[in-house]
Length: 231
View (tube, rainbow, N blue to C red):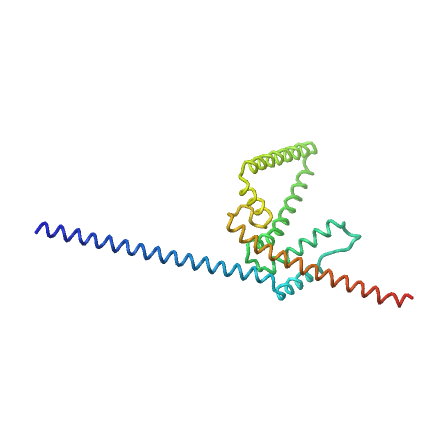
C-alpha cells in the first residue's frame, strides 16, 4: 500500500510539473506574439509618419503655419542685423515644423519645450545681472573667470571621454546631438527619431523653397508693373 501511494504521489507531481511547463510555454508564446504585434504596429506607425511628410497636403499645412508665424516676426532690416533675422526665421520654421508634427515625436516636443527653457534661462540671466550689479565689481570678475575655467575644464573632460569611446558609439553620440531631444537616448530611439526628423526637414526645405520662389515672382511682377508707370 505504501509503495502504491508513493507511486501515485510521484505521478501526480510529474503531471503537475508537466502542466506548469506547458503553461509557461503558452505564456512565453503569448508574450512573444504580443511583442511582435507591438513591434509591427510601431513599424507601421513609423512608416506612416515618415510617408506623411512626403505628401502635398502636409506641405501645404506646414506652409500655411510657416507663413502665419513669419508674419508675426519683425524682419525690418534697419532694426536688427542679418544673422539675428536668419536665426529668428530658422527658429520660427523649426517651431512650425514641430507644430505640424503635433508633438507626437520626441524631436518635435524638444523643439516646442526649448523655447520655454530659453525664456526661463533669460529670466535667470537677468536676475543674476541685477544681483551682480548690486554687488562689487571685483567679485563679479572673479566669479565670471571661475565659471569660464570650470566650463573649459568640463569641455576638455567631455572631449577626452569622447575620444576614448569606439567609433560607432561616437557616431551615435553625434547623431543624438543633431536630432533634438535625443542626446541621451539609446540607438533604436535615435534612429527612429532621426528618420522622421530627416523626412520632416526635407519637406521643410521644399516648402521654404516654394515660398521663396513665390515671393521672388511676386516682387519681380510688382517691379515690372511699376516700370511702365515710371516711364
